[in-house]
Image (cartoon, rainbow, N blue to C red; front, side, top):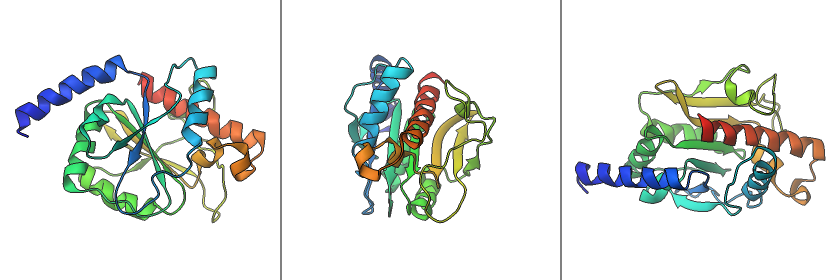
Amino acid sequence: MNNYRFTALVLILMCMHTIHSQQIAVLKYGGGGDWYSNPTALPNLIKFCNENIGTKIQPKPQTVGVGEVNIFEFPFIHMTGHGNVFFTEEEAQNLRTYLLAGGFLHIDDNYGMEPYLKRELKKVFPNKELEELGADHPIFNRKYKFEEGLPKIHEHDGQRPQALGIFHEGRLVLLFTFESDLGDGWEDPSVHNDSEAVRLKALQMGANIVDYAFKS
């Protein structure tokens, strides 16, 4: 596809993005990592957001591949997993175009994906680095206040939770939540036996992320 046709297609799909402005998709990627993990997480987060922050998100999240052109239909894409991540050069270019065109990607490390993800993000943004978000960043001060920044949901190896981001022209286009396991806290109570307090904290942080992505 030549550049003119591709640009025109992106513009058409971004119009669709505006029409379907409150849709969420799970990112399907290669490399063998379990991109499909935490199957109850997003439906629960969507339900929480619709009931508490005024969103009207479709209850069932969609699935979209990194290299698929319909990625542009979704203003918010969620990515998770435990293991390897791999993007082809074409997929990396597609993801970069999506993010620069107004899309938002939230990546929640389900424990173990961090080294592979950082390697692949260099294909997406060769000249950008992940930057840690301070507790004063607006994403922690939406409807729900997190004065200490990203909350810790599950303990693995004693490391502190980190919210890392990639910015373009001052806009946060990619958020990587690391050593937190937000998605585990979004899952059905029976999956991890988390307390209601822990689940609520995870859902509230997730709602802040959704609200920020839709309104920023």
